Structure formats: structure tokens, C-alpha cells
Length: 148
Image 1 (cartoon, rainbow, N blue to C red):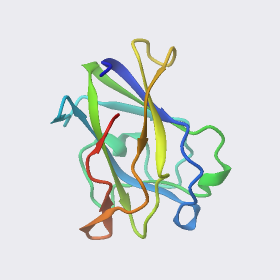
Image 2: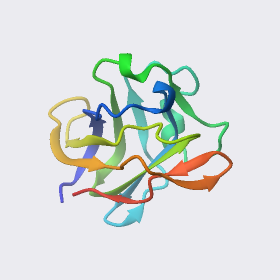
Image 3: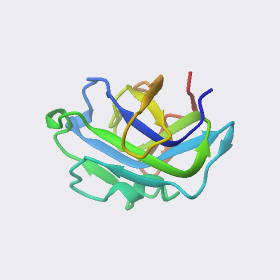
Image 4: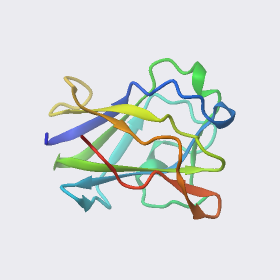
């Protein structure tokens, strides 16, 4: 697969979200099958009602540590960018969300670039689906989803 320092997720599916809310506690990435646990900087164009970009990659899946966007359907061209600080080959992604599912679109496009903020090339459409598994304490996971 492709290896890049900068990664972007965008072109989210139009799947209706529970209450039209985007409500995440974490986005986790695997580099050639190994969980990346630190060194990721996250930015986006999302107007959070609670939380911020950094909670998406801080390693904490706690209910109090969340990034919430209300009225998700009104957001034009949402994108989330990740700087891994070094080149990574992303092989799996996991979405951790809160409350009744789904609170994350069923699929999105994953792209990579060698240049921060531009020249992103499509790597895959990632389908996480709408049936997440309970982790307890109102937290849910997509499980490891292969990037294919």
C-alpha cells in the first residue's frame, strides 16, 4: 500500500447519523498492522460543539473526551487531516464513537500526501458500516477496518 506522512479523511457518505450528530472519542490507525499510539497531529475544518481535533488522536476513548459536531448534514465538505510526523503505511483504521449508533458516516475516502495540506491522492474508500460493537460506558467501536 501507499506510504505517506500526511493523511486526510473526507468525502464522507451521506448516511444519516443518529440525531444528525458526529460524535467521536478516537480515530485509531495501524501502520503495517501495528497500532500507532503517539506522534499524530490532527486538524480539521469542523466546528465542534464539544471537544476539538486533538481528542481524536490522544489515545483516550473516555466518554468525557469527545469531539461532537451537531447538525452534521449542514457541514459543507468536512475533512479531517492527520500529520503522523513520519511516513506511515496505514493498513487499518478504527472509529470509536459515542451513544446510539451510528454517529459516524458509514464510509469515507482516505487520501495521502507528501505535502501538508495539498496534493492528496486517493488511497481507498474505507467502509466502517453502521453496526458498531459496544465497548461499555456508552462507547462503541467499528473494530479494525482494513484499508483496501
